[in-house]
Amino acid sequence: MFRRLRKGLGLGFLERAAACHDAEVTVDQDGTSRVMETYLAAAKNSLADRMGITIVEASAERVVGTMPVAGNTQPYGLLHGGASCVLAETLGSLGSALHAGPGRITVGVDISATHHRAASAGQVTGVATLLYGGRTITTHEVVISDGAGRRICTARLTCLLTDRVPGQAPAAGSRPVRRQTPA
Image (tube, rainbow, N blue to C red; front, side, top):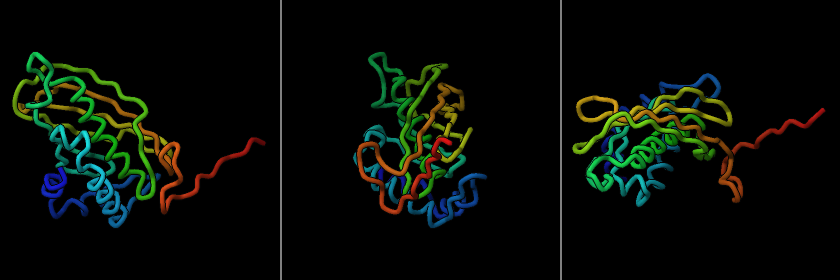
């Protein structure tokens, strides 16, 4: 996956990613680069890597990735619904991380998926689009299509943005979270 991701991003990736920004959170080109480097390092030997997920395009507002159907099927030879959810969460979580910027952690807290039709061969393409991007929550819609462009799944992913992995110390370079005290 590490090599596939590097190839898929292309030379214009960082420029495209930096050109897109959210009104509440802006990640500069250096920040985008750091988030992607962290993602690429963590993705090696991960579930997404084992499932053959390749990132084609990535920004805070839109992430596109592909996944082969072969090897990700249920016993009837059809794309497993769980595989579609893994693709959706991978793409939405990456978009959430790009929205959050360096030093922040993103974790999926809710996912729902509607499976519209079956896929039995080729590859599927997922497009995660940011629906809401705040300081602590993001929501993405992920549309997964087959090789003919037919929608096979629509998923919705909500991620929590935090400065640390739950149960661990804050990440290096993270921003302190301001908590309001009751009046």
